[in-house]
Length: 471
Ligand SMILES: Nc1ncnc2c1ncn2[C@@H]1O[C@H](COP(=O)(O)OP(=O)(O)OP(=O)(O)O)[C@@H](O)[C@H]1O
Ligand SMILES: [Mg+2]
Image 1 (tube, rainbow, N blue to C red):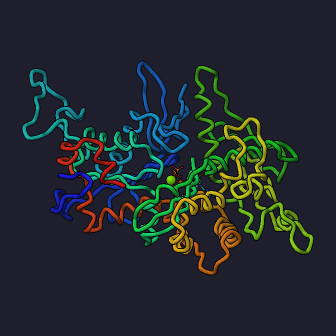
Image 2: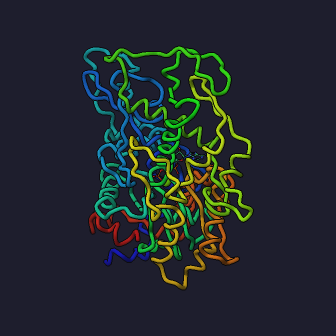
Image 3: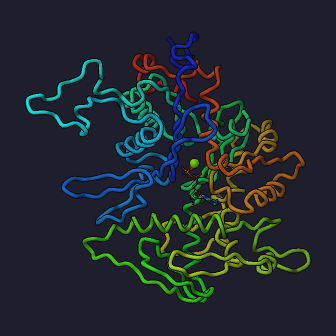
């Protein structure tokens, strides 16, 4: 049998079981049942590690809760969006579907710790209960991946799904294709502004046009780094983010006045690792992005001067600022700075320099308008107009206030045509979960059943079947 051609009869089918859709991102991992509107399980992709006698791990929202001594925070995915630590990625993904979707498998009730076992009656295996049943033995699994996931990583993914989780059927889909499906399109130019990356994916008839896929690190984490840079240069004073767990009490202060708070301190042997503080600071930064940050809507850059001689910066300064209160009570109204922190997504020269940042200064080629141009240059001229008429915006960082207005202005300048059209759902859940929702739709289509890679095919052809079937 040729593994690149799906079997003509459905080897795995049946509407009675729901497939599980798993959409792992750099900041959160989304899991849920195919056919549902939103993922039931959304967990941080970060996990905690600390040691007592042995090494212990914390998954899920519990990582935010207790600043244990020595607790450090890690992410199994690299900044480029590709898995670095497979062992932990497997544990974390497994947690994402076990914790909210499928629950624990039955086990011997004498072993669950709720029953006192009389002496002499040592528990024996219960008949008919498989003690080592694999977690997805009953569920087909559709997973998403970034458009630049290397072959090795794809093979490792199917291996985990088939061998560790025992899934009877598997498929790996590009998250750009899924986001297009979520928007009801089989062909689209998908602009995904996530946490670790911003990417542009040309999709044609449900297939990624590989030569056109572009990505750069100018995603949500980069925006956070620009906000930090702005805080360092803030006047009347630099702003330090002190997360809630370090604030014992606070009293309200006037805008711009130093915080009046008492702080919690941890002796060195009781303190969590610095990575714990960074994780919690990031939560405040996300709130700041939701409430304060604004994209200069255009036309033209923030630094441009309009026809009447008034610069866009002056215009931005004249619009009322937005207030924000930090966990220690410090509060301030943010004026034009709230535009400056995101301007470099469109204009690299506008980046706020910060020698202390993890992020190198961006290049113009990494900005969103340039990624779009490169993506289109990588595909056939004939289909470019169709892609431009179907620009799909997804990813939680695209929820930045004013983002779509600016993107439309940039597109109009680069590709003047009345047929250029952006489609971005107004509903925030659809923007956050675009690729998961597309997976949910795809996996519940009747016609999709023949696309699944069955366990039997995997056994016959090995992990490389994923390269042949999931294009
Ligand atoms: N309303 C909002 N406005 C702006 N940014 C937001 C908003 N809500 C969340 N974010 C940011 O969006 C990012 C998370 O986006 P998303 O969930 O799409 O990423 P991901 O899929 O986990 O990561 P990646 O796509 O890089 O693998 C975070 O950086 C977060 O701070
Ligand atoms: Mg993403």
